[in-house]
Length: 504
Image 1 (cartoon, rainbow, N blue to C red):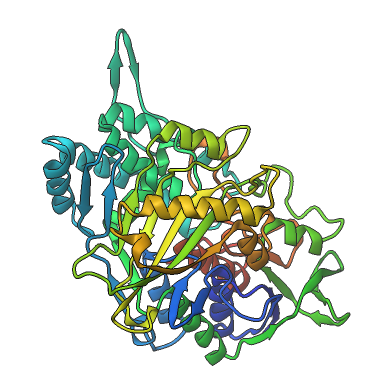
Image 2 (tube, rainbow, N blue to C red):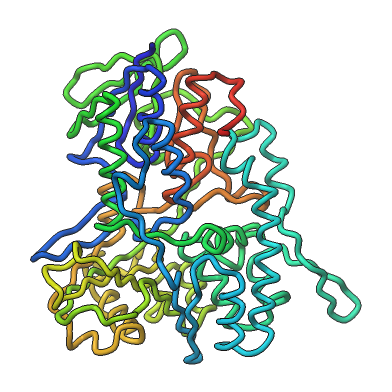
């Protein structure tokens, strides 16, 4: 039985802690803030409650597996999972709209044909078939196994089986997400639909590899789910599972350093001057935080995948509305940008800025626990923004002005929105940075193959024996399912050692 110290109480860190405790280890978690969950937080005011991190759960099987492997009590016994149907409603720049059924290829094809014209559904359906092939080729090495030492094989090989596109005397194959939209989907609205999945994770569709096709495939194949009471309920359930397995939690405990002894990690230095000894250290923190904790040691060996830097952030606007949620409205609506090229230029160009009419996600949960009574509604707006918005104005002013523009955009999805608005709260990149420690409030995307390895994340093992990394900033990247998978990988590497070949 080893002593294991975990830095941070994010979802990946807690997933690892629960699995390690069940394996018989003594696990202690040290969290800088006063609560658990990392970016999975809840804001409450006047009887309204909002998720300030992820609002929906794809691939719930990851957390079902966690609960099965850490005890006899299944996930559904501690949280109420609700399948969202339709999975999403889309409002396009030209005024057309479509609602996509949850986890139904035939239903999606029929809905797209009816809304966008004959043939649109078949093109999207054929794309999903190819996306499934990309998923099958990458699922195991990218999600269920530790990052390969020869990770460059994943970086060089494009798993998406693009179809030949002939123009003049040349035959081309899509290697980028935008090329799939232009050459295979051949409809600006379908292209916007595809791009929206990348943008939601802070990825530039014009540079994201075709392998990013797995992002819409995940939603199509495994459905979109909501946790009654909000995603914070999922964090609570994982925390309580850890406590039930005798994981110790120390809140308000800032880690200032990783203790090294005889060339390996041997514990943690804490802000109060004390030392927590351990045989293994698991770090569930952003790269900048880990760099400060591990001084003078190159924890990423030569030839390893470097940490991701300079990623975008998110802006979230929480709306308290008078008047109940109308019957039958979609839980999730995506309002697509009026000018996609302008949006991408402002997000990912050399001079980052804020688009007044960006791609906007509107969440309207049907949940009595999010409102004071049936005569009110809680709505959340989310958009991807640069991690740093340098306009000469204070960040609070910049994002306050932008939030007002987002409310105007959201009126397309929520009629009479301004007339119903009681108050709104803005959660900026600074809030994310304060919660997670990530520079600029950056949010890590999932790992993807190809693109010369630009979209991979560092391995969970490090150049310092005994030190492992977990969560969105390490393999297999960001997002709730990926965080849970990283916990399984780290637990396997510690319990089974370097010969561990992945989750079963």
